[in-house]
Image: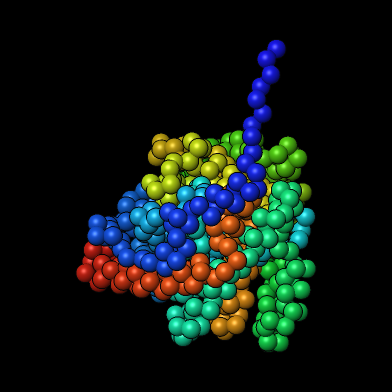
Length: 469
């Protein structure tokens, strides 16, 4: 028997040296610069290429939502920013990326233990890549939201610098922690309540945020059940609200519907194999009773998304699942293709890696549709204690506070999968990177406004059609 050589892990000192060395190829102050490259593609073309694979009748809704404001446009323009980030120099230190880390993708969620936690929510674009791409996506979103509120340039810079300072200091904290302690870290309600009581916000702001914590607990499976279903011939069914929520009975002929329902029942059974055995057992206690197509988000409008109503003990024991189409990440052309052949598995694997606690029904499958095409999906509960921020109502102090929460949360997510010691060493103890990101965010917000105007002009000239309202 021959002995095998054990894998050698770099020492903390070696990892820190790697981070400091990255400053030579990617100076921290250099992140301030953003200039679109000369061969930058037409932003409208980038969006149109994404739309080509989506449900045609829903694409105008996507454009209509993106036209509501520069911030709504930014939410739907992850593919455009991926082009720009891919053209920039980077540190070469990679981690699992959210891929779309704008501020509204940070929210209150329920952990499996029924604790309310603050975490990242959207992982459609998740893929390994340079850690700073997520930080730049977050920073630019904060400036765009602050501009919509008419914050001054100084206030906007303060918001961004708070987010990046929080990321930097949190990462430095994680760098000194044991691996298991990093893995178990999460921002639960007790920690959030302690922050609220710490005097960083005015009393009125603390009341509003406390109310948000309480409200999030009401946005659960039962609330969604009451809102989205109705009684038809004595049985619970998903209510029709076209074009945003359309039951299968209104979409397909009776023959096609029967085939689709049969296929989807098989999907639910197969998808269960991507869950742990205990959760698969729980899923087996529910029966599927109805299906509807749902329009979701801004950037996701037009992707195929199905709501599945399942009932357990009786008609008042619901489980609402969402099966959402997963395509190739917008980051793939610039950071490399996923190790997973199934794009739904890519999303699930990234989410489980980055989130402190993921939905117990999170899984994936591959489906052949009625058109004969194979598509990948990931599946989770439709709603489980969700609370989303409303930046349009925030004062500068409130947005700064929220930005700090986002920065710390992103650092925790990156520390789970990336080299937290190297990232912390690169960032250092000063605010060089913080100030650079504030400049970058302003420059990219300018670019976002130009791209928003390009889409507006494309609708005005009839190049594309948008549906508003």
